[in-house]
Every structure is written in structure tokens, then in C-alpha cells.
Amino acid sequence: MAPPLSSPMTIKRIHREVADAQKEDLGAITLGPSSDNLFHWTGTIPGPQGSPYEGGIFHIDIHLAADYPFSAPKVTFATRIYHMNISDKGGICIDILKQNWSPALSLFKVVLSLSSLLTDPNPQDPLVPSIATEYVRSRAQHDRTARQWTELYALPPPQAPKEVSKPSITVVSNPGAKNKGKGRAVPAAPSSNASSSSTARPSRVETIVLDDSDDEVTSTTSARRAGKKRQRGGSTVDIDLVEEERTTTRRRLNTRMDRDGGGARSSTSSRSMGRVRDSEVIVIDD
Picture 1 (cartoon, rainbow, N blue to C red):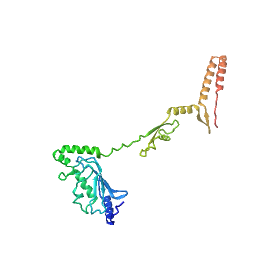
Picture 2: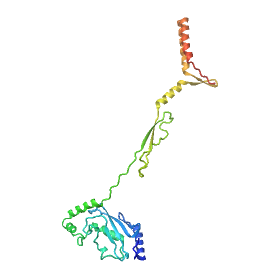
Picture 3: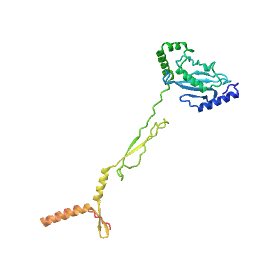
Picture 4: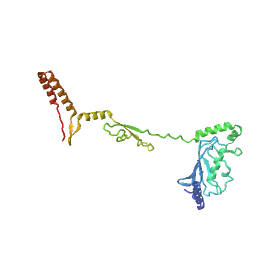
């Protein structure tokens, strides 16, 4: 929202600075107007490397006058900082915001000058004389205090570690599989808290198929014992191998009983034949 006495030239100048700020390579510096007021800008300045303010992020507020750029912008530090040229309330003592202001300067150049002020303070024109005196007489103590203030007020909040979802492994027993190592994938059961986090990654499902080789061997043995095809002439005959083995055993018993005598052969043959007839099965396919 523009001030009531702002001129079209001021509005045009601010729009041009918005476009220039979007084109400039600001690096870690941020600068831009608020969403509802072109005369109120905000920005952030990272602590320069090698200075006691390194690692901190310092927020600034910028308010433009109705006759900007003919009047200097009012810039204050929103983040507390231990600096001889910046007051406890955020006021800044720098020449380009006072007598050395020029309409040729821009807000981007003002922010760059503030970043340089953190590296090279001016003890000749201090806003806080006690800090300037400490800077001159005990530089190590000054830097320790400035570093403590940076850690206390300017460090960005720590980022939460990203959760890495572990893949779920589903073991599937597949006794009737023809090809070992292949089987249908079984989806993992949905987690109760899966919908609570929008950033959680979907879990992968790995399927391990265990073939029941014992069942496979048993079924193969049963198939072998159940029957066997034998060619007879032009047709195929299925012969029960179990019955064939019993017939061979019966013949051997009859031969032995022929040697031993008729009576024993007769009784033994009756008992043997009785047992065989109870389970005798002969399958012949023409």
C-alpha cells in the first residue's frame, strides 16, 4: 500500500528496483518488497566469513519515504547484533543512509554496504561507543562477545533430519513354483502413520520366494511310483508300477511253494492272493 502523497515517479522507481533485484546475483542475500506494500521491504544478510558474525543470518527492515529516491530509506536491523555502528534497537550509523545518500543509489547497494559494515566496522563514528572502545583496546574480547551474540540471536533454526524409509521384505512360500526365484509380489500392509507425513517416501516392497523343494521331490517321487507309460504296438499303455512289483512278488512265492510242496503252496497262495486282491488295481489305456 503506497503512502497517500507518493508520486507516480516514485512508484515507477520502486518497480524498477524490484525488477533489478530479481536480475541481480544476490548470492545468500535476500531482498524484496512485502506482498501487500511496495514501500516496505525486507531482507537477510548472512554473516561474512572470517568475521565474528559468520554463520548468522541477520534480518533487516527497509521503509521507503513517499518521495523516494530523493529521501534516504530508513533501514533497521531486526536481528540483535553486537556491533559498534548498530544500536540495540537496530538503528544503523552509516554515511550513505545520512549525508552521503544519493538518488543514484539503490536498495541493493545499501544492503551490500551493510554487509561490508559487518566485516569492517567504523570505530571513528560509532553508534555504541563502549563497543568501539572494546574493539580498539581488546579485540579478542570484542570478537568473543560478538560471536556469542551471533550464536544466541542470529543462528538459523536447525533443520530436522529427513526420514529414510527402509524397504519392507515379504517372504512368500511358493511350493508349486516351476521357476525358482519367481513369484507374485505381495504388497506391504499400509502403515497407520503413512498419511500423517507428506514428505515420507513410499516404501519399496522386495519379494523373496522360497520354493518348497521337499514337496517338489515328494510330488516327483509319487509321480514316478504312480505309473509309467509303455509302448505296446501302436498304442500307449499306462502300467501301475506298484501292482507290477506285487505281481512279481506273487510269482516268486508261487515258485518257492512249488518247491516246498503243494499244501503249503495252496495255503500260502490263498493268503497272498487274498492280500493282493484287496488292493489290486490295473490301469490300461488304449
